[in-house]
Image (cartoon, rainbow, N blue to C red; front, side, top):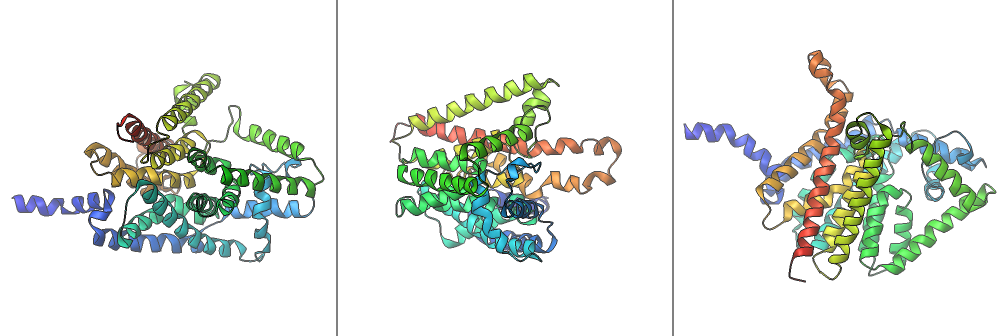
Length: 409
């Protein structure tokens, strides 16, 4: 009877080993994550629709014709310096340019995943073998943010890669690090956590170069449309207010704002929005306070990075590609020498939810075959990712608080 029970539970144990500390069973991790990663990466250029690339390319084309895109009704939510940095996309061929960009994005995603693992393990002082590092890289490549980034023609993987490389090069070449950080600021909501990390680690030269890089690109755009930089920035901010302000604000797929406005606000926008702003300020101040307390502790930077990235992902309007930013929190929890069983189980659920990508499956008709009572629950699946973000933010803040309360420097 015991043998039969063990045999029946063996697949369950294999799944748990795959999701919880995959470096403990490298052969299983490589055998499962490897083929899945290849399928995910290959399907992007073949099946993607590349809507983000098409939209950005349209903005660039209009700007290249001499028009100021912020004066037109085009809902451009990228800052002006972003358009300058992305202008090389105009050199891609008009035909099959999106597919070519998707192929390039495959290599960018691989490099970004490797950089995140290397950055996290480096700050945490962990020495991983090539096989162990590869196992985690493959796991990240199977995550839904990678698939979404390639299928949609997203530029976020490139921005994440620039920010990761900026932190890696901060000591050896602050100028290069600053330029990369300035380019990464093309998506401020993606780069903000990395900027917090750069300030925490006192990378002042890199931060200064980044500011000069972004400001110079802004001036280039303003000069090209015969406007002042301040006027262009005001037009950009006005566009953001129209898109992300008021009851009809754009609801990102993973940020917590709809939790406060749609659920906790009980149908009252002003009340829910006030709760959201209060939570943003309180948690942001808590992050800064904990980061200040651990400023002289050698094991703190990695938790500052994880907390900063999860905080920006939780409180800024981010789509599914932003889930890549919680990778340091997940990796740290899996690598901790003595993690609690509860935390490991939470992270296992987090990984399973991200890989399965239930909201996208539902959007493509997963619940169409179910009874109407179940199919009506489809809108609630969009809160799964928000619960994942909330769990990771709590874990990262707990890790940072644990470091601040530790007696060892």
